[in-house]
Length: 371
Image (cartoon, rainbow, N blue to C red; front, side):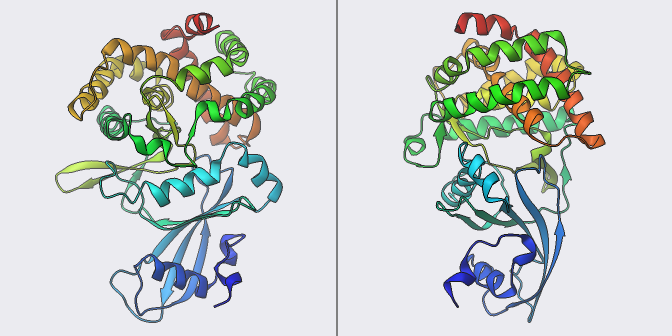
């Protein structure tokens, strides 16, 4: 096989039977069988706008019990200019690194799709992931939000993840794993550039309070990044919301698989918790469930080895953590295409939920103190 046959495909349709056979054999799921046919079905991913995703239905020349009937493929953008722009925030490098270096660790505490291949090209910023295709699951939906039961399951998984990596030396040994300070300047520039477009696109449903907070946040972005990069650090998902969760019944309980690990960071864990609470629950739900969920998270991290972290610490970190969804939705709202009916509904719903959470947690007062 020529080296070119092993290069990163430019599109899902360009994946060959020879290439896929080689990669699945390297992953240990193929032995004697070979791929003889591939049917490509494009899939619009959660945010789905920074790369190419598809489901591959695979035909083999012989039966093999471990051979997957379908594979999920995730590729970087086919546009070199887009890849270079996203290189600044490490989207592709980060997810490839996560699946290569972290997800396959035997002690990794939560369920993620099994990776068959994880590759990133430093020279071109191109990447490819071949992942287990999740089936017989209920995918979460940010629009409808999570039930109380599913919210409890999700928050407990967050606690397990954060406790496992709380202060872990491994976090400083992974070259692709960034702290917020590593990218503060780049993200601040993107945030400031996207803020006017976000305000324009969301003008119909943007509350004065949310607009004011978003503008104020731009002025202290560097200070915010610095603060969140001090204190207890752990592995954070960075985009922990219903759209990136898949629920299923397994054995005697209901479990969850967490996917889309493009913005994993080394940071304070409750940033993920604040992101989930403000994005995946209606305003009424959050106000009803927030205290029990905060308690569940705190109990989980304590029960799994975290010491010296008080409920006061948690509340402070959740308040500060609201900067995470604020950053994401301002940048996404300004940069990405939300013109579909669902996209418009999602921006409206998120703006409503986030605005209420920022008010409830007095985020503006936090920004004043930070300044």
